[in-house]
Length: 189
Image 1 (spheres, rainbow, N blue to C red):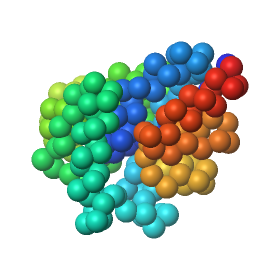
Image 2 (cartoon, rainbow, N blue to C red):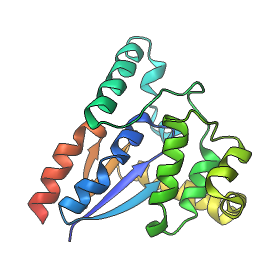
Image 3 (cartoon, rainbow, N blue to C red):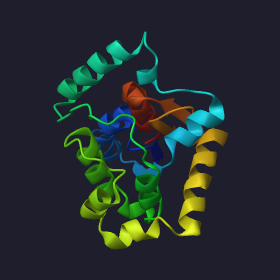
């Protein structure tokens, strides 16, 4: 059974869009899906990248492209009023969970930010979405280190943004590479 690792940060609109499709792709290809939260801001700083929304020549196209992808997938989407959002606490909460328990909370955070325009940097909002116990874990030094380690691993494996997918050593960057990812999974199945 092939495995696909999904490196993401809930601040990434294309990670949100990919998250609406990746489970079905993995299931259809008989692949195991591993949710790999990391801190996109830390990765971008480490590799010298910047968000496409910060590039004046690219931003207008980006906003149209996001609407097109959401319509194509038939998923709800609204660009948030607060962007970019600091997701350090949210990502710590996700990385603190066992891998097989990350999907539900990840979807809840994506929906809260990319559909409901909620301030997921606000601890009260995070507590409402994830629960008090999970949010409390984010202060644990081991959880903080786990997020640093996940971000460092993404960098060491060649990631420069999100979403980034790995099938073995093969990397696929971006929501628009899902067809190539699916092709690779079918080849390995």
